[in-house]
Length: 589
Image 1: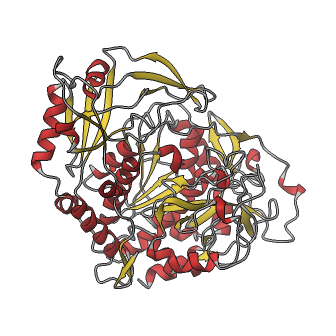
Image 2 (image 1 turned 90 degrees about the horizontal axis):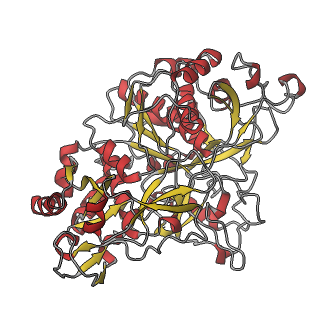
Image 3 (image 1 turned 90 degrees about the vertical axis):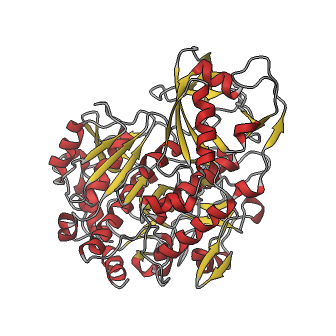
């Protein structure tokens, strides 16, 4: 990465600039039977679905009249991407003359400069095949609704329904069994059609019933475990009171920070029940109200969604909360939703991800990274959970030649990745250790960004590292920060009308997001711009976090992982939040 005025002028060469489409001759064009023309496969490197290794099972072919909604990412030229990235770094880096000078949505559109000819050509191509086409405000995405028969003809694809083999409640997916292609005349304008070949990771969230009563534990090694919720089922589970104590969140800050805004992203049938949120709020003495739900919701309990909502509001009860919902896991649809808002929430917590290798498409990751840069340029903070399978990810490390599997989007240089910790001593509010299953490591696809180069170099200079052939020491390193996530003391949640304990970085992520929403309020209350993309600030202010120096994120299934050490590490980042120290750093910006 080249450094210009202390920031990265360009961290990642846009993959779309260096990776050519695969040209294939696939026969008839989409909707003119009998004609022949060359076709392009935008994601040709994606292997066809393999039922022997996938957790998704192929079922019947889509009915010809089934309605299909697709997100079409239009190509953004390389020079425009460079301008976007340069602006992103400038407005996000404390000390840069442009810091905090965030763009309006119209300015982002002008920066991307997707030509009207490109938008028109792509729109007309899909509309001529029978689709309803909606152009996103930034003119870089189309939402296309058409029948399955129209989509199959246009994309030279076979669409099938897929069912998850283990999570019975998961919604079925409509995917292209053996890839897709586009007529060459329109493919020059399109980066990809998402997410026809991506299969999301879905895991059932394990819940734990109430543990031993609080009186059975000693508080000698730390602070007394607070009785934060009236329900006895929450004893020895993490509650809002435990978080406030450990992360030094003053009640005044939590209750008066109304100038900020925040959101959680929910997918895959993860809804919330107002009655569950009310029960949690009443027992744990917090306001768990939702200002707005985008994308609709149904009154069905989903423990993942309710965990997100209950704990981002536990930390920041006065900050207005928006729930952004999609029925299927689609990063691109979520990105289109938030970029289409004139006044989007300032902080976004997303508790879902996948392995980089399972995303497999360079175009897909580049399109997601472009969306993250757009958000940062507008002053939005995007936080992703780092994953719950340790260094081996969802795919596993392999049997004969073991290799770690980094997570995406957690390993993207353009977002803040939140890892997981446990208390060192059960039911003692004190020192934390790396959660054994917390995601962390080094990207195989993205280089180390300038903001973390010094911290990562220090980590790599210490001796306690796993074998070098198992990971890429030159890749973007994550997580950036962490919060409680493990199973020593799970989080107390209310879902489906009952109290239970839940663990995961999907708990840590909304907690950290809520803390930064509170910090944003300090900025906005004083007439200052929002923090925006957080990582340059985080890496300039490691004193804002409580260092974690114990534990290793092996995943629990094998011996290797990254150890938590003094300073930044690939198990917990800089550690867990210290609100008082962070507030002091924010006030000095």
